[in-house]
Image 1 (cartoon, rainbow, N blue to C red):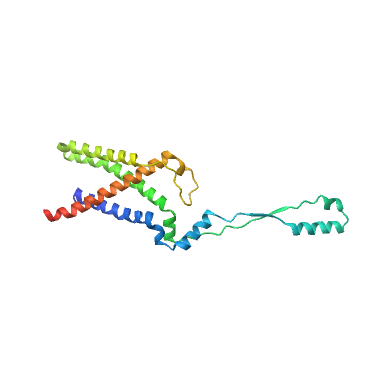
Image 2 (tube, rainbow, N blue to C red):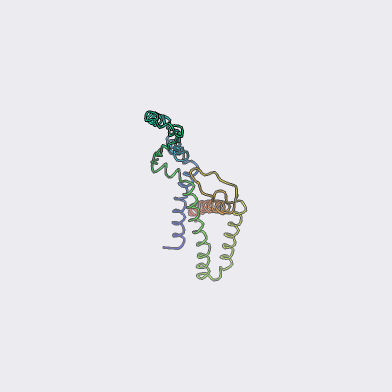
Length: 211
């Protein structure tokens, strides 16, 4: 199997995974029952708090019993006690699709990291292998490396470090400008890679008819 065919298969796989993830990221809530999904999210974000109310009835009974026994000093010193009534938070069971929608940000970021790693490995190894096989084309390989580095640089310049409001996330990474900028760089680079992959597939398919 030739190197070009392997590269084509890899691109098909990447595009085949990336498109569903993008659909999930942008249109995920349209794929589930919005009313039921939002109700479950509200239960997670706003759990029922424990109630703290004075148990007045119990304390009055205690005061009456002490008064009957003639122990008025204890009646005067009796304080209205607060009793904590624990409330068990209802367990939320997501369906498989609802779980994907709820964690769509994590899925997109994780896939972005994978694509960034694949792109980095590809950008380093493929030109080296190609240069070894075709020493005369070393300049072309260097241009490819420069192009990838420039693409990462443009992605970084276009990225933003603005604070994100992520549903269900309670950590601090969404308020760290440095982390947010790196994540945004990965996502934008992901879009560039996806666009180039789509263009290369279209070009490869169309060019067959002109050979």
